[in-house]
Structure formats: structure tokens, C-alpha cells
Image 1 (cartoon, rainbow, N blue to C red):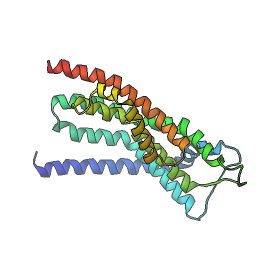
Image 2: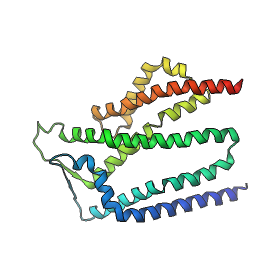
Image 3: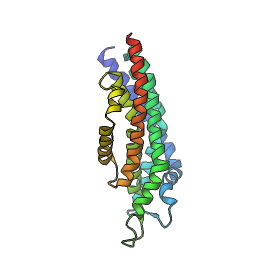
Image 4: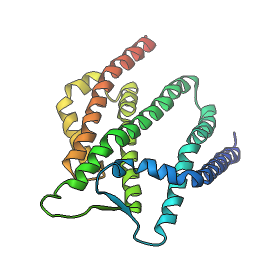
Length: 240
């Protein structure tokens, strides 16, 4: 298609995305209190921990922020479908075959990372962070809603992106940059790289949280090796 037609098609994707997010955010406004109550469970289930507001605008800003988060999450299938329809006609048949695997697997890993973070890492991590050192200096923990939303979003997105590791490694294996044999031989260097990466991308500087992130990353690395053997074998068969 001419460039102008591509731009019109892309504009349509952006318009549909904007309407989907706006509609989801309006719906999220009515359920924002329930959404925040659910997101705050890692803190609200702890003893002697309270949420506070420090400015008159904070409750309203939190309601808007939670509404937008809910709207983006609700509109995500529509966004992915429109992007899919925009990209798919430009791909060859063999490229589409890989896209059919990569997109669902990437989404599954992303939400798996978010769920792992929310239900396992956050409850232990927040408890450790709030109570660590409380015996040395007596204090009453208070958490502002704004800081908590920023904290939890950073955590969830970080874990969702970290769980994309198998997809990245399998793509590198498929295009020939890496091989499963090399990944298996470089396990020690992989452990060192994972430790450094978790220290860089971890939302908090404590070793406990970094360990909770590094463990799943190494597990995904091992899974990538075994899946890489299957990818390499299929590539060899296809070339033959």
C-alpha cells in the first residue's frame, strides 16, 4: 500500500486504542475503589499498617490513576487485536507462523510474571521491607496511597518484562545468534548476568527482593535451554 494508506491504517489503530482505553477508564471509575482494595491486599493484610493521604488531591488522583490502569488492562485484548491486524498483512507466511506462537506465549509469560509477583513476591517483599530494622528503631509504618501505587506498578511491570526471557532467548536461537549448547555451557556466566540484571532492574535495592526475582529468571533460563533444543531441531529439519 502507499505510505498514506499505511498512515491511515495506523491512525485507525490509535483511534480505536484511545476509545478502548477511555471506555475502560470510565468503567474503571466506578470500580476503582474495589480495584484499589484488591491491589492493596499485600499491605492491608499486615498488622498495624495503615494507608494515609498527605494532600487533599491524593484520593482523587489515586481514583483517576486506578481507573486508567483498569481501563488499559481491560482494553488490552482490543489493543492487541488491532495491532495484530495492522502488522499481519505485511508478514510472509513463515513469519506469521512464528508470530502465532510468539504473541500468545509472550502475553502468557507477561501475565504469569505479574501473577507471580502479586501473589508471591509482593506479600513477602513488602512484609520484609516494612518490618526490616523495626526492632532497632521503634516506629509505626504508614504507607501513602500514591507511593504504593507507583511501587506496585513498577514491581508488576518489571516482573512481567523479566518473564519475557524465554521468548528473547528462543528468538536468538532461531535466528542463529545463540544455540542451546552454548546456553548450557555458559550457565555460570548466565547466573552472574542474572544477578547483575536483577540488581539493575529490581525496584528495590534489598537482596531479598532481588533473590525472589533472580530465582524465577534462572528457572526460565533452564526452560529456555530445553525449548531451544526443540527449536534447533525443528530448524534443522526445515533446512533439510
